[in-house]
Image: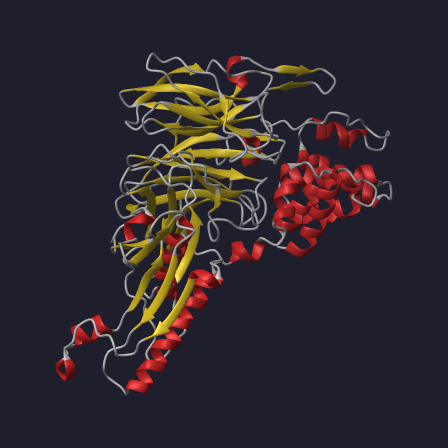
Length: 624
């Protein structure tokens, strides 16, 4: 049922489709009337009678595609592609195979789609990473999910929590006539009480807003007194006539209602509605200034895109704006939900790489990062959509047809933390883009490394209650580390990574680094040692005439000969590392001095601290 709000209204394009012959006329007419259940029956009869050809197979496949019956759709697309090499047929076939978990075969059809339509962004994205499924499968789990008792035996979707009321859309009203698309009743808006223990009371229809047509999903203002909702354009007697098929073709439209006491009323159609295109699935920002919605209006990149429009203080609206390629594709994107931070957008996409059907993605609108697939278990091989998240209660909701019917699920976030690092010049405050930022766990293992964006930012999502370290480096600057303390609850921790210009470590006679550590009795460069030596590399690159002599020292424990040899190996290892970074041989040399030049001349009575001072490397400037 949610396809009414993902596809082009509850109408899909049938341009160019004519009854192939008198045998298909009855089935074609049902298809053109969007009565897909009955149309499938008629096309199947033609197959049983031996009257099927490529046209019938394609129509039958598309019929099941519109109902998202992946098994039947894939079965008939396999027949259709024998004679129909249209790019979109390959694409739909691939999506249905993916919906059945047949990823290898899906990839074969996607390659055919890419060959037939190489400039389609969906094709380009696939060819850049055709085997992305294993990576998605290995994605760290972000949520635990639960089936909610508020679901019925009919379609239920579009859940959104406002204060302690859960609003959602359902076809459970069995007193209503059925809709030919899928033989379910028309959609209505329902409410249920969300209790402090997480239970949800029995649902009640929102009778003052429900009409004889489709109604819902909805979005509400933060105070709960303003609602935007989807309904059919028939509500305002707005439609186009298809006289041939004796149809009135309506569109999904957006409406606004306000609460007066405990009742909703004052229903108004939004000014950018049209009988030429659909507008649906609204989501209002927490500050009430921006309304997000889905539409196939002119300017869309694909079938249905996600748009936004300004909500002005005087109640008027701006001009709708397409959210562009970071969100939208040549496929369908729908069900936007803007989080309470007014920046994090969740949405459903059938065009971006996913597990199958529609997957839920999220994207930060205030930076240039790519949309992120929420992974399993929120997403599955079927349709997963209409995700919403209540930050105050730390609970998400979404709908999925993974069980064969659109049902509502709860999504409980696993405790997560965003570590947002901002890299700047410590002296001027200048933002440093293209800085290298790594995040390390409590055992100093590098988890991930990224380059900072134009705002100097890199964000990492990590687990709560753990400590981390940020390493940041930039050309012309001294690299540095920054501790990230353990945080108990999911939030954003900001790290101010202020880097000193590399000139700060260049003194009169030497380049001053922190200790370059080696493992006990070894001379190989460790990761920690390499991190320090990288500072010397930066200094030498910034000063191309500089010549360095590496002097390695030990404490006085062990024999003189042993210490001399160990320190010499360590000095030469340091030199080799510097050379590996592109510094020429005539600019770097090294020698071990063992215990012959102690920094602290403490003899046999050295403390551990004094021994540590004597175990050192010095980077002497031979020539500036």
